[in-house]
Image 1 (cartoon, helix red, strand yellow):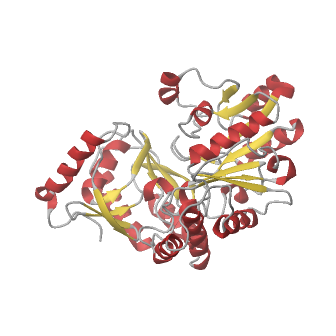
Image 2: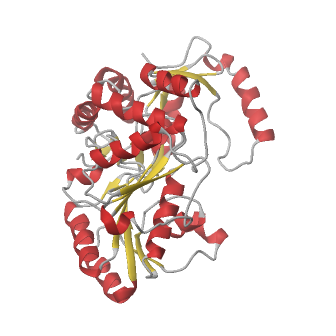
Length: 412
């Protein structure tokens, strides 16, 4: 059972010391840490004072296998003892095998290619350059979309609060309301022959777990086919089994031209990837036109391969669907919950009032790690290994919390 250890509030001294050291040594880009975490096992983590938490955030959709998974640890250890890093002037077996595996899982056609990076932002940066390489200048992105904080990725990220202080952005990006078909058609028409790409997340994670409709994704595919523009699908948060399919676009039967991946791909080891579908997209970036020192290094590739294999061997895609459906069912009649958005184990619990930050803080004190991407939304992106019994400990707590705090609204 999750919850604070016997140390309780009196045992927080070590954590406070670690936090003070953090604040004196690191740039204040993330604010004050909520806790100092020292170890993990499965879906649980422990802080410096011995308190245990059920980790339902999973490093923000990163720890697909949970913490300290034996297959992941074994792959990392074995590869570290064999070959840790070489430059991209050389090939390594894990890098090649991972690229082949991704192309196979994505059902990519002949001529498809993969580029490895170190993060989702870097993957989207590469996708931005691919759009530029078409020779066209206009990119359509969506309001609510989040694609990263490097300059090209940030140019396609809508949130003004994180964009404006770094202006001017690379130009050519136009934002339209998500899931607004008329606005999308109008923007594509206005861009005309200069439309290079449309970029979207199938489920907008940082906007509060907001899925795009099947009809809207199909419209993007239709417009990009018709105009010769690239359909770039950002699956950094939705990919690698998170939504109950290897990739969220497979739930819709719609294939993009470019897919970006990261987060859960490495199961905790930093890695990103760009999958370019078909000969045209696969050949957009040529020799010397893009690169990275660490992208696709043997350690990252080996852990990614182990993550994919464990997801397959342990039936974790089905588990994501089963546990996700269980969470939806339990929350469907809870007062104060108006809806549950998302797919698989990428879920946004929509609350009747904007109290998500308060819920998150209370949950942490009770031994649960969750996240508020929006004032009225609690996000769950746990390990794909999460069990229904583990989920139930949080759901029981949440029901009790909402029952004793002032919330109202219709249930989903």
